[in-house]
Length: 365
Image (cartoon, rainbow, N blue to C red; front, side):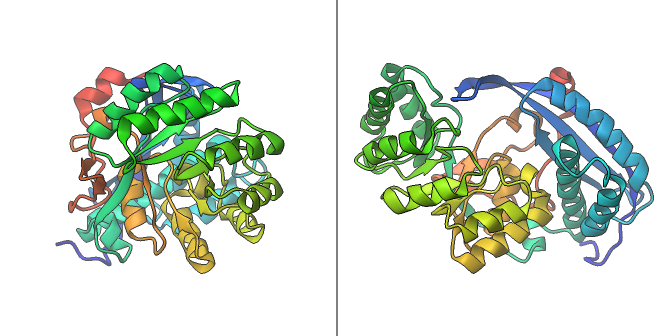
């Protein structure tokens, strides 16, 4: 096994843009997504270890824009030690006039993940163990579908998601009429049974008044949580919903770093919280978020990036649910394994991101 203290030196950071067709179109209150635009990152080191990560870019143009940012970052960190916090501090100084936001913050988060992956590989440990935790099964819910389809089709798709090995699924809401959302919930529940957890997500579709009305209706339907019903940074509005609704309120995928999360906790804006690996600041940002959640006694779930997030939830004191999407699966030599309703963190060194190069070539933009 390699020495844990082994130092690594950056040789180059490479980005490759791909677009992977989704098995099911994902219709939300914001837009419908049929392909997953991803940016694959490879951090090459002088010692021969490669750290990997990927970013979800939402639209192809963002993936293309990120390529230029990644090329610039690669030139700035060449010959630096693979030390995530030191690299982040250096890049924050370099981008001070622009600000660490948008595609810059996305690229830096991906670089952070690749750094941690490389360090864990060099140590011969799974990322979870490198972070001080034992790799273990992490409860997961299937988020690969159940968009804003007609309520008549919800039952069949809900049953399919459960049949893929899950005891929990997510349903998107935000139809024009409250009755249609309630019909969709009931159709999913009838198809899956009372033992399956049903998370519902509005993707910020409502104002506070609408959220209270729909939330009170959902309180009667046995949903596990109500996710992002209103604008993501209306913490006072979220605090009102937490007080008034009996169904737990979930938010956090839009926290840009840990300061917004701290503000949300102070405002008592969420019963549960779900940092996003790409927005919270990579592995470093996630571990800071996990410490905040632990101090506040708030359970945290993940948003996207299940392969890395499974390791991070295993290392989080208040780790809760893994959001499972299979968008990167076709690009991986060994996709994340779901068994008995849980993601099984691989015992191989690093985060388990090994590209299938033939698939990368097939889906390259």
